Amino acid sequence: MFERIKSIFKKQDNPEITFWSEVPGLEDVVPVKPAVNYLPKWWKDMPRFADVELSPEGVNKGTAKNCPAFVDFFKSAYVVPLWCDVELDINPQGYTVRTSYDKFNFSHHNPIQFKQWLPQHLQQNVSMVLKPECPWRVKTSPGYSVMQLPMMFEFNDTFECMAGTIWSDKFHEMNQQLVIKKYGKVTLERGTPLAMYVPFKREKFNFNCTHRTPELERLEKKSQIIVLIIYINMF
Image (cartoon, rainbow, N blue to C red):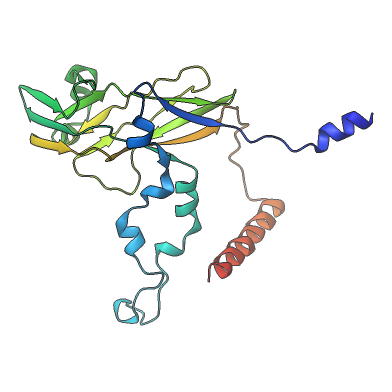
């Protein structure tokens, strides 16, 4: 009985996520890093409060830099950066690709696999879908997957990684699908962040969309107090 009670209160080990490369040494040259290392410059340059002169109400307005959800999101993700320089020359008839290291290969998805089925206004903004043969692998604890996401808040006008999920406790390859948005000569530099990976536990949810109850209203008020406390403690 005592052993059972101890097991209940035993500290649970944190789930693990591990990235490794099939190319020896890449982890020292262009490593995967937590996404907080890639906070966008425009966000870091943003003040916490806007100048009074810029506010139509003539008051000091708090900016998005005060929102804890932004940093919390970046704390939950990991970023795979580009592992070599890539030069593309793209036209409507095809493309050529050159890399700074011939061990790294890139292919593409034929337009019939994706681009051709997009709404017409989006097709005009897609030149091709580039598929790197990514040298990185990922492994998570049993029951955990990773979400592959584009680099959120980068607003990259050259490319965007497609979103998807990987059962990373069973399948470890990571091949990003990069939607290239331009024709002509396109250069992607080594170290450019390609995609974000957010681990999550696979589990089913009981879905509810319901009316507002007194208990739910109480939770709203509790949430407002928690947010206010967090906001005050930021200063």
